[in-house]
Image (tube, rainbow, N blue to C red; front, side, top):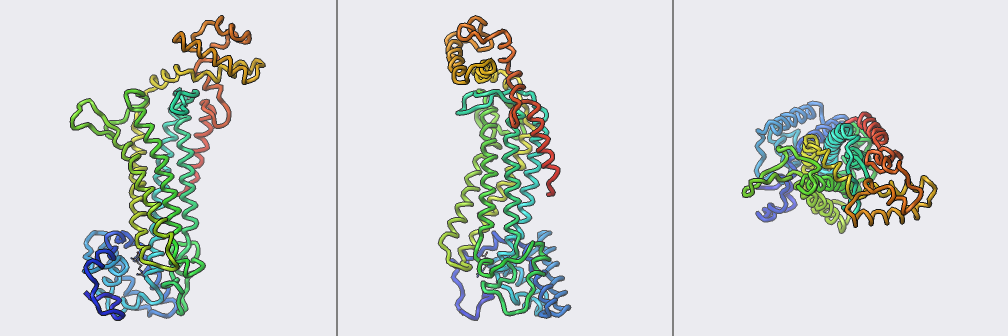
Length: 461
Ligand code: ARG
């Protein structure tokens, strides 16, 4: 097949060259953005007098008909389509003849692909943000139901201090809220239109870049034509933000895997989000959580892939950059699916409140509260800490808990202990009194949920 660029070279490309060079299987998903970009470009060319109104309308009608065929799956791509840009231009010219050949005036595939990619990513960011809001809403609803569901909070995987399931869930809400705003920040910097940069050094045609930027919904045109076609930092930034989302999902998933094990039994997954074993009839495996955790590598891989592609590239466009899309598309697909599946899994899981409470009752998670009791009666914290340390040793030796120790034992260690220590040591009271801003008391967590709900209500996605 003669190439669109035959003229400079007569030789046919080797099959292996085509195999390496063709990106159509990956970039065909840019068809909408490519068609929209071409229509706007043609509109600008007509406005500036480089196309007649008739030529423009035949380009527009032709491209819309092609879009329709892509949408309903009836498109037949021309043989030897190198990429989506060539494919659509060829389809258009086959369909409408001469005007199709005028479309590429004052444009290069370099500014075209940079524009298409940004347009695509802007709308993908919107989809990610929608999914994040769905997840945040699910967390808010669940947290509201569990303001008083006491559980131990952990450091070093050891029971540390008293908390609630709501408090724990709201920790993740903060991470996903920041993820949402990180995506919004990415969009801000991505929101510049490279169209009109040409291959790299602009054009001598009197084009109107403000017009195309505005028509395509960008905030403004890019400032420098070489930069416009050279950098993919917007994709790197997005992949970094996606990597963090997947990190958060992965940590959350890890805890779900742990917590539904027989060792914990804090939660029970809905059957719909588990699978069975082909051999062990008793198994109910948390595959969804495991896969979300496991897919994290793909997303990080995408980030490193594209950073590596860019690191040694001289300005401006180099074909290496064609590798950018596969990494980003894969990360986007992974995150969108992970967010959706995770949200449904979270919504449907059941909480074993009794098991959480029982776990909170052992492990001395009220030890800090016991020390604080002495501090409230005038003892310096370090002295109080030492006394409670001894009390815990006594408990360990006698297989007891602090709240079960006789008052004399307490008083052997400090005269400051009195009957009311027992009320202080109940887990519910420990939680209720941890009322500092951001803390686990139901009152404090209810405030956190209210702030989250305001945030959800203020977003516009
Ligand atoms: N398929 C190419 C890409 O995605 C389009 C740009 C081609 N430009 C070029 N100078 N060969 O990067």
